[in-house]
Length: 219
Image 1: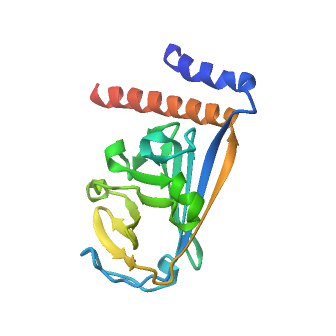
Image 2: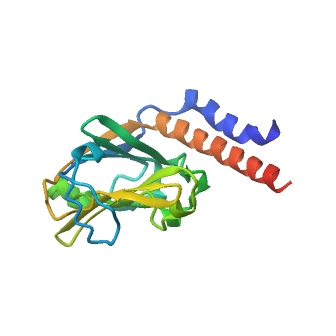
């Protein structure tokens, strides 16, 4: 019980948190026509929009100026949709801490997220620079079905891919390169500080649960 006190105490602060303090939620939506270019050597590929034609990325951060990365985030989720609806959703970061993917614990080195507020002001479609929910491809070691979803928007080059791993083996990849039906929209929404306290509390609770489970497994 004593191990839970830090998280409980933090969550109790919700009632005292100032509502005028602002962080931001960044919501980016990328729609595309899957082309199966296979430029990154991953395959088999698909050109069927039912396998994926839209990705929604939602990030929350207390930093709202300059360039931010995954370590600046309180939460990060990446969701893949096709013409028949939601295909896969990954809560990548919660409470400022990386979560599991396919039963395997991620670290910050396994995640990439880059957003530039300065670029966003002049070119909103280019504020989101990069993201990757499985940068070091730990999915290959999982016995579950997972997706590696990653995006680059740097130097005039745009690329998005959603790679399905079934028990560690690639089953399909979408591989869309350079404006093949690309549409990127981003909205930055101010967020009350009380919500940030809640996210931090959830993250602390999740970290405690993970450490306790790891000790039990070792024992």
